[in-house]
Amino acid sequence: MVDRTELADFLRRARIRLAPSDVGLSAGPRRRTPGLRREEVAQLTGMSTDYYTRLEQRRGSNPSRQMLTALARALRLTDVERDHLFHLAGQEPPRPGGSSDHVRPGLLLILDRLHDIPASVVSDWGQMLAQNTMSVAVTGDNVGTNMIRRWFTVPGARDLIPPERYEEHSRAHVASLRAVTAARPHDPGPAALVAELRSASPEFEELWESHDVVVRRPSPKRFLHPVVGVLDLDCEVLVSDGHSQQLIVHSARPGTETYQRLELLRVVGLQDLTPRS
Image 1 (tube, rainbow, N blue to C red):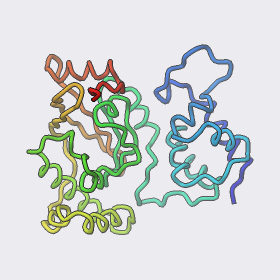
Image 2: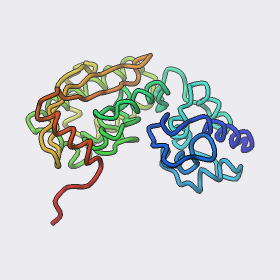
Image 3: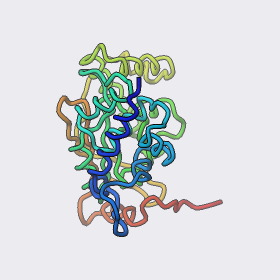
Image 4: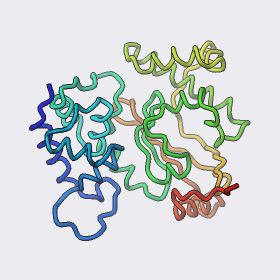
């Protein structure tokens, strides 16, 4: 059962304790009331303002697990607060030791502060959990997408990567996924992804049978960006407590062409500058 009164009160209190700068938003004109606006929470979660407003007014429909996860991330809830949110909505919180899409507030705070270089939070089995604006400008908006599934099954998913590096990326994806499934054999998410990809992708199946095991390491990355051209980036990987989530940061050395191209990309942001036919 959903406790609509307590859920509405909890959401409102979590919203008003946050400033726009806490979630990477501009404060804009002077505000009459503290905290985030309802439309800003809706924007951060990908739901309509009307739907979120109805939740705070104790008349919304039962939120799904995906929506609760998005709310916990947008409102920067701790693990305990996230579990409380799930309980108020009549849902069982994510099980300890399994996969979770909840990104810790500390990681999101770091992500918001890295405004001039691409950074993202990815689970150890490929789920894109959060991106900053620069990451979206480089690779597109992939939040909610499993990047390993996308690599092996979605046409055009490899367009940003030079063809000579396809095999390297494929092997790294498969080997890291094998390491995760061995470490958490009872976690249904990674296991289901492996079963799906073994059936859907002959390339994945062949690499899976090779039984390579690796974890993601810092390494140079090359992207073929459709607007600014080739980006040669250094990649740093910072792991969270428990190693189930990774903060991935791409940077360019000052003075290089890639550094200048990143600066250009930061200025143009998410504008669509591709040529029109």
